[in-house]
Length: 540
Image (cartoon, rainbow, N blue to C red; front, side, top):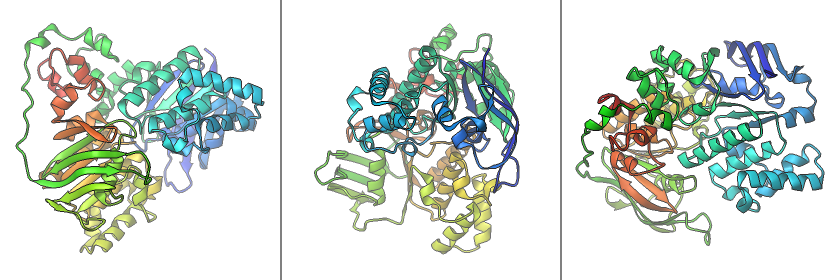
């Protein structure tokens, strides 16, 4: 095997950190590897990946060595470092700098002094490879999240890097765009012989592509092996079982581990014949409850004469209900939440609360969690954020409330951390904690599981269930179908600014081909309404 990049006995601490962020890390990346890095939020995944890219090396105290192609990473000349090692970030907007797609692609080549004739040839080739012909002259701001990430990948691939590093690249993509993105990575790996290392929280669909899975916890590397071997290791550690993809988890839970499957095809071959003899209880609709809010005949555009983002939209949220909004990137989910929150105004139609048309622009009983939780932060530490929020609301016993909130969301360890320095999952919990101090009657959440690891997702699910039981109504825009299966009472699918489907979760998910869980795809013929591994394991 040819060693492409190597990290040896790496220790690293950010300047503002009191403890090591990476401890004794040894990673060898061989040419042709497809490596997936997983682990809890804050475990050091992003920090580790940034050590593979000279321009993104984090600032702090560092010991150990990092090499690329046998040469110290920091000694690479700038052009070689840019062209040989590509990096795709979690947020697609962070890497886009030009107005149109073709300008974005050309800009990548201009940075390495590519001649015009060669530039045209390379762009034509990569556009054909990725199927971007129809988007070439499209404004970047008009692209969906999946399209933006594809353009970022294209710009990186144009330079023909030997090593491609990706930091949770599908965190903001819908299920269909995620599958397409993984398919392209598979082609780049197999057809272009590209070495890939990427971090992911959701291992469903990507672990099957990898020849190695690295698992991190507390800044340490605790596993580095074949995905099936690592999953068996994680299953022996209950704290990390939630990281195992649901298909694989089902077979581990039922002790069917002789040939542990990573794919649907492999799992189907091992389903017991007796499974078809069981009948699950059919899903039943909950009795209708009072309406808390409703959007009636809603129409919205960002520009007076622009295309409708929402059109003839009717949706109702009931008391004590969790309503999940699903749909592709750009289908109008986030826009709908912003309209309800009073951050955008319908061109036509009404927003009603408890049957009355909303008069004021904002409503204090509504809490809104933006897709980017960083928008909610104003102060230097998490504790200060909570303290100042209590003061604004006029709460008493502030210190006690802050301590209770930190404990409730299990974020005591980051109380003195700047919220902008927290991991994505930690930021989501901090932002939600801030909103809940005001005791909202309605909670609007925009992609609350984005960048959140399975452990923190479990905390989030627990909190949302408790809120619903206490009388809070929830409307959640999400791409995460497994999360929907855990918390939703009703699901709606947005398409072209309209609601194209609405049902309770079991019926909704079991009637879809793509907006459904891997477990439902696996047992749809035997157990049509099963959507979680626990349901299948119970009748195995």
